[in-house]
Amino acid sequence: MKFHDVIVVGAGQAGLSVAYFLRRTQRSVLLLDAEAQGGGAWQHTWESLRLFSPAAWSSIAGWPMPRSDQEYPHRDEVIDYLRRYEERYGFNIQRPVQVTDIVPVTGGFELRASAEGRRWYARAVVFATGTWRNPYIPTIPGRDVFSGQQLHSAFYQRPEPFAGQDVLIVGGANSGAQILAEVSQAAASTTWVVLEPPRFLPDDVDGRVLFDRATARWRAIQAGRPPESPANGLGDIVMVPSVRAARDRGVLHARGPLAELTASTAVWPDGSAKSTDAIIWCTGFRPALQPLVSLGIVQEAGKVQVQGTQVTDVPGLWLVGYGEWTGMASATLVGVMRTARSTAQEVDAYLGAFS
Ligand code: FAD
Image (cartoon, rainbow, N blue to C red; front, top):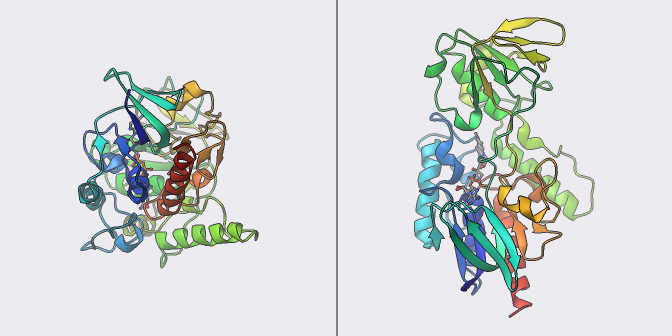
């Protein structure tokens, strides 16, 4: 059985960033990715999606994202950038491979892809599987009797299918605001449902300020000072042009959480109800860590106990790119660099201890 020094599961921006830094070591690295092509989850985002920060603030390590002809790059430009990034560095990637299990064995780990009936072996493993494959929809009484269409934002592509319908958009962060802005121009009516009042950034700032906040927070914590900015600053809504236009059309009015759903209506705790044809759940994601469940380390909310990015209870296993709990802004293009670099350094040191 041939052991790779490192297997990285997932070749989206996080996995590619780790692979970039591992190039500086003499380790043998293989990436396994479930998609047939490069681009990670970006290839599944909706057609009109644009980044909430300029190209210069959306690059991963080593090669800046080419400038876009618009201030905020379109998702197609991100996909193209990630595919060309893979080619540029010639990573050793096998795809499509959906890893289903990881089993500790003498000398490291066995990784299994049950659909392909294949196995790989590695001395160290980095999971960078993102969240797209684990969309989250909250439990709402009556959701199973609602007869209209239900779609998670992970699968939303364009507004036309909702033309003339009464649509509920559930979720008060960037996806909810951007999909509301778009669907409200096609639907008969849209109703925005949020858990708490949405937080909008000022018009004159964009995603850069979210990264600045994350960096200031990271620096404060490194220096042992209490951080100023909120932990989950990345949830603040960036006033991209489509969301600003929706505000100017008076669309950005949010209602509080639902009490229940019936076959054709949404009902609020005060008893008010709204006839509803379709629901778009912009209610976020959970880490796509299903293959780790058999290790008994995945907690209730889908997270895992880590020290930085290293899994506390399983030596030789790291998690990169899952958001704040695996590093400030680590679920963003520019933010993942810090933890990708530190993870590569830790993996190299870990392997050195055994060579
Ligand atoms: P992914 O892109 O999901 O890549 C993970 C890879 O792992 C995929 O290729 C997948 O096939 C593979 N994989 C998963 N499970 C397995 C398995 N079991 N076996 C093998 N392979 C597997 N970030 C920004 O910086 N700027 C933005 O403007 C921005 N806008 C966003 C807008 C939306 C709507 C969303 C959802 C996110 C946005 N993000 C943004 C956040 C972030 O950049 C993306 O979510 C990005 O896709 C995360 O990259 P990743 O590599 O962690 O995960």
